[in-house]
Image (tube, rainbow, N blue to C red; front, side, top):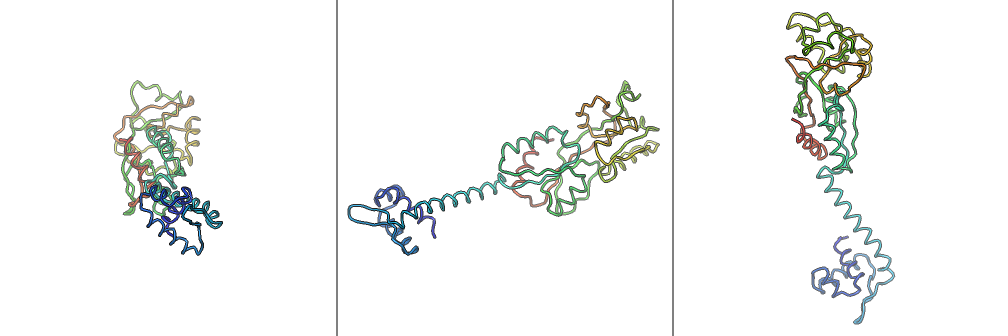
Length: 296
C-alpha cells in the first residue's frame, strides 16, 4: 500500500471535499479522485459516498481513518529513528575504560556532554584492563576503548588507536614517608631500595616492565614488593606502608588524607589511547569526534 494514498485519503476525510483536499495537497482534483479510487480498488471497499452535493465517509471509511493515521505516524517514527541512528543519535555505545579514566576530567566532561546531546543512546560502561579492552574490541563486544598505556600495544589491522592525552607520573606514599617531605620532585633514583606496590601484570598494561627497564637503565632493579589486583587494594596497601606506588598523574585528584602524592621528574609519560574498529558505528564516530574536540 502506497503511503501517499493514505495521506490523500486522510486529507479528503478531514476536508470532506475533494477540491479543498486537492488544494491542500498542492494538486488538481482529478488526479486526487483517481488516487482515492485506486486505494478503494486495492482495499476492495468504498471509502466515500460521493454525490454532487457532498462527500461522506462510509462505515468502512470511518473505521479506516484511525488506522491510516496510526500507519502514517508509525512510518514517520520509523523514518525518524533511521535518521537518528544514521547520525549516531540513537542506539548503543559500549565503552571500556582504564582505572585512571574517571579521574581525567576532559574525558568525563566529554561523557557528560555526550549523554546530554544524545539522550537516546544507551551507554554501557565497563572498567577493563587495556588488553581486555583490545580483545573485546576485536570480538565486537566493545565499540570504544579508552586505555592507559606506557608502550604502543599491538592492536592488529582491524582497530585504530590515537593518543588523546599524555600524563606525567606521580609517586603515592604515606604522609609520613621521607620522600613526601623532599624539597624537590622525586626521581627514579629515589626508588632504589624502596619497596613498591604495583598493579598485577594483567592490569598494568606493561607498566611494571617499563618501570623496571627505566630503573635498570640508571643502574638498579626496583623492588616490587607486592602486586595488587585492584586499585582499591593498591591504595590500601600503600596507605598501610607496604610500599610506594607509581601512578599516572590524574590519580592525584583523589586527594586522600591517608596518602601523599608527589609529581615525579621522569623521562617518560603515560598516554591515554582511544581505540575503535576501522569501520566504526555512527554512535562510535559521534563520541570519537567529541573526545577529539576536548583532548590534546
